[in-house]
Amino acid sequence: MRGEILHFHFSSAPDGNLLTEQGEGMRKPVGIIGGGNMGEALIAGIIQSGLLSPEEILFFEPRMDRRDYLRGKYQALSAKGNVDLVARSPIVILAVKPQSVPEVLPEICASIRKDHLLISICAGVPLHYLQSFCPFPVRMIRAMPNIPALIQKGATALAPSPHAQAEDLSTAEAIFQAIGITVIVKESLMDAVTGLSGSGPAYVFAVIEALTVGGVKEGLSQEAALALTTQTVLGAAHLIQSTGKHPATLRDQVCTPGGTTISGLYAMEEGGFKLALMNAVIAATQRCKELGEGLKRTVSTPPANRTKRGRGKKTFRKTK
Image (cartoon, rainbow, N blue to C red; front, side):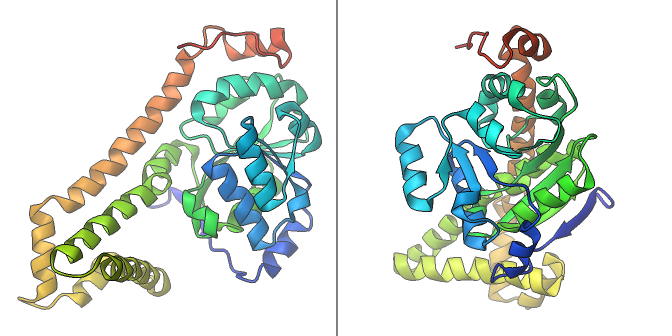
């Protein structure tokens, strides 16, 4: 899809200096609603990169044990609740499960101001759905990072809302470049991003597991097979990234006529390896779309009406 990806950036400051400079003009604290795996990845990555200090990150997680864990490990500040977090944070990152959005948005919408920036990493949740909870146009960025953000090796796609300003996109880029690379795409492609890079680490883990088992079957120890496989995958990825060559070109450089590699590739083709991976992306993308559609059926009252009547309070029933 040439032309669909607007542009992308790599984090260019391993020591954190450039990232700290980018964060100097950022409004603080940055608030994160949700302390699950991705919420933790954001907290850890942002602090480890040097973009923000622990005191400049505010989070809320309803589970007390999880909240205590994050507070103890990262020294980030814990808000009293979602409303408290929004009131204190000019930048709010919504890091909850898609199914929780109809519950969280009515709670916080009354506290969102016109100068707020709302960044959502909720898979399958379109910006117009988030906007439907708010009584006025809100500056929003839809983001889809992945779990390697925990070690600053994440890949994040960003899509701005019609009301987002250039500085809002720059802020989002600074945050997510602190934990990896960013790619700017049209929002219509965000479900595909979720199916590819959002779910992608799980596909790669499965590939590494399968290659490791193959090595063990041929006599290698579990430890040796896993070490060799992991470094092989890491090295191959770095080779693509550093050379800019197409994977097929690099693949051909490894193959020799009648050699071992081409025999292995032939066996992979017989097993439908490439088709299986392509179908994985397609299936995950479709599921992401279904999650977005399912949000429309989670509550019986339209979001706008619920917001107006409830003024941020929960005035609806959960469906079982």
